[in-house]
Length: 365
Image (cartoon, rainbow, N blue to C red):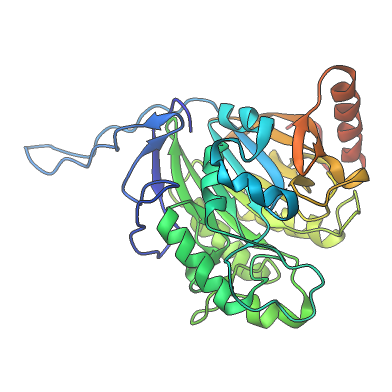
């Protein structure tokens, strides 16, 4: 988060992360563009001593990009993390908080998941590429997060620990996978939860985290998701839920998406966003909270035709409420989202606004 003090609490239940190329471990405080001093500890000496005063909340911007992997021609871009995501990084760096969906296992080994035509994996340097582009947090709760099964999961968790990169929706057990990443941005206490509503039927049991087994947070378990949001709500000014959901190439949300969004908003979510369809969907307000049903592809090697329509969703948040939403359109070329300008951008924004028509959402709070 550039120009703001950020206090990072890693995935719930994780042990202290080891500082590495992508960042620092918990207990550190990092600002976009440089290191900021950590929040001062609560006072423990002196009559009447108490916790340090909480900084005043300021308005913030949050940027969301869609499905991201480093397959094909994108793999070579990992050699230079600072430029790996191309020109769209300017938009991500400009936001106070930026997030994408990391749709790949982080491993160089493992066993290809049975019955899957497409399986994605990337080396740990993927986290350096995300950080270099200004991304602050990612979700690995999606239908490719465990493409290389248990060994790939172990490698992914090891890479998360080693890099210190904030990652939600995956963990060594259910508490960790469903746990919120907590961060303070310009005085705003933000909690972020990740989960997937999309899992191959024959892999649901193996891929879903439980009390004694690692895996992904599954949004198919609605009571657990509601509980996760309620837990995230405690001591937070803003709760974000990032979901992998929907139907591929379908530009309107499914009934199960709409039902889940209503339940999560009722449980305390302020923002519900996600992806999976490989095309952008519409977004808007539900009971005063912001819901977006699909970001589309973002950094994706095979994008073409309608699946190359991309962009960044930028939300403005003031006192825990989303006061404005803006779509900054892009077109994927060579696997990278290239921001649109002029008439092309205006036409795509108009088309994107039209996608709201089938969502049941409002254009204004």
